[in-house]
Length: 342
Ligand code: FAD
Ligand code: MG
Image (cartoon, rainbow, N blue to C red; front, side, top):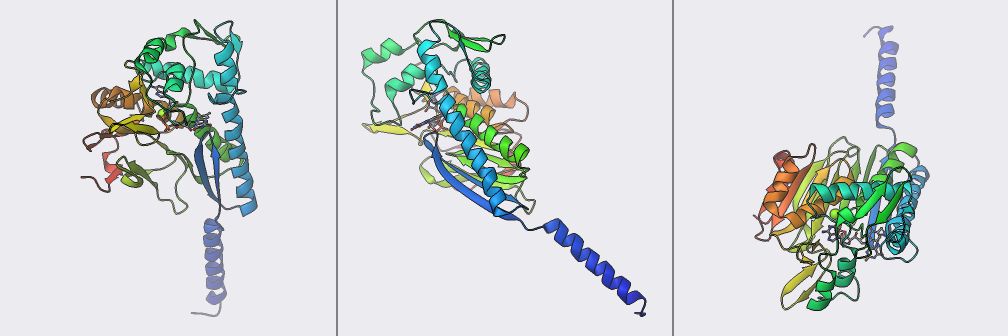
């Protein structure tokens, strides 16, 4: 190599190294775990920022979850939803943007699923109390006093004054099957829009949402719990920037005489849904949609759910039947890996 070329080569190598280190930057990470919404929320964010900056991003996202819990909780006496439940049958109640949006989506999914997902099952859900210390199989006469009183068509939203009114006092709202999804979307929005996070994984008690891909550019691998052994995964699915939400009969339940009574109620019977599915997973972009659809499909059963999900754009599903069969919609079969159970 001539003397003149040597410095040029060195310069090129130095520039290349500079570019390489520019590409790789120093990727740091921050983690958080908190109990909010009666479930464990974990968050991990990655980025070319300091750990303090990443922590500040997580602080804001978790703070938003607490803020939203105070709006949507059916379990606390001072939430916005509780106030609506106490007064909306007497006169229309003006509500927050967040509650209006989630109620609107709830009524949309109630209609789409022909009432399989129904936000007006609050009184029946409280009667069963699954997931609380007072959970018990209701006596036949108390069950019949609550059955067929719910009806999502009796919730009237008025866009002009952003209010909600109930047609009667025979039902109450419970948003436990959809609000967690909205909280996940909001946590993601804050991380992306306010902090520029490009890679993150949030898990809200089985309701997973991702930002971008892993820092090496590969997709996230999300495990879906084995209904027979929920601490291990039966299926894994690869996703990028999407959400994976599962409803299962193993999440919250009581057992009596060998029968499991879980927390997803079939409004038609007043009993926990028993239509052949034990786990339903929805994969799509928005967690609010995935959450509502995971519950709706659980109640609908396999055939109606396959038909419903195949009719929706950009929504996929994995169903596990009570026989242990694992079925997927057509758009994701290649991204799903069965780990055991076959
Ligand atoms: P999903 O299938 O998504 O939802 C099932 C839940 O939706 C049921 O528990 C019931 O509430 C409701 N539901 C049942 N059947 C239907 C149906 N057919 N249609 C529509 N809805 C139905 N849990 C606690 O133990 N303590 C708390 O303090 C607490 N606070 C919460 C506050 C908020 C704002 C939210 C959203 C939830 C809270 N939860 C609490 C409940 C908990 O976090 C989960 O929402 C619940 O366990 C159900 O979530 P899932 O994903 O397992 O099931
Ligand atoms: Mg749900």
